[in-house]
Image (cartoon, rainbow, N blue to C red; front, side, top):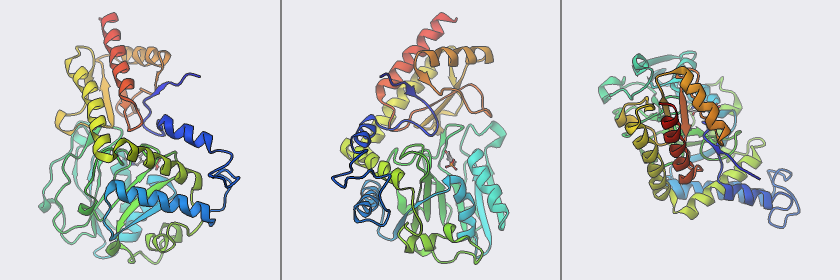
Length: 360
Ligand SMILES: *Cc1c(COP(=O)(O)O)cnc(C)c1O
């Protein structure tokens, strides 16, 4: 067996320990005589899995008691509609910061339901930075403000949570979920698709302050109504059982490493290895302003499309896969989520240095 270093933006690498544990438990989960894939979501044994996952998440993220944790489906993209349906119901206004494609898609969806306003954008420079804002940029009667915390495609991240005054702040944290500590109490809601850093595809985790719940529009589809999901403890219908089980294993793995402070240290170390190389290289360079660089997604380019293509081809042959950048940025992107070992980044940088020598 040989495993590659997978730099995919998502679905992405899972910790090898998690995959091995899942394999070992495949036929018989803890003496139940069944795979987790086969068991009733209403069974006692499954209750232990979903409740266990929630308890671990609350512990790792230090989630305050007045927040609900929901396990949902439909991907992060379904929340683009669910958020306005649930919350755009006071003044009917919502303020969005456009830092990339995912923020833009969320904004465009909200425009269908009310007065969504783009209060800042970094589209002028291909989303290579985080626009600076102050509380006065937000309409103080808006029902919520919305950001995308880590911009998966463009490789930017908010290092500081924007001040929105008294407007409740909602953040898409899909691609930085559990990558470092986050002060949940600063947000009305954070949510993310699990397939970047938490689990396989099929699961969205939403963490919502309780006072936000209960004001959804009449027309909100039942499955998208956060209050209904919260009251049903994420078991209104069949949840993505197996994905939640893998999520629990990933959370156990994170805890065994020492939690979010420990994974942050490791993620910073990995990112530094790559950014230091990009800053010293004469062939490769990062595309993001240094102060807004993501720890998770690192886009980079050479000055030639041909060289980019050659690099991707040779890297793939050498076992460094999914390095092609998003079609809107071109070049390369290395996604180095929690499960990417330090060694994977060290080896990639060595490969890049050798490529540079051989091609200049
Ligand atoms: C991947 C991604 C999405 C879209 O996720 P789906 O689960 O495919 O809908 C949304 N936001 C961010 C930040 C992402 O990285």
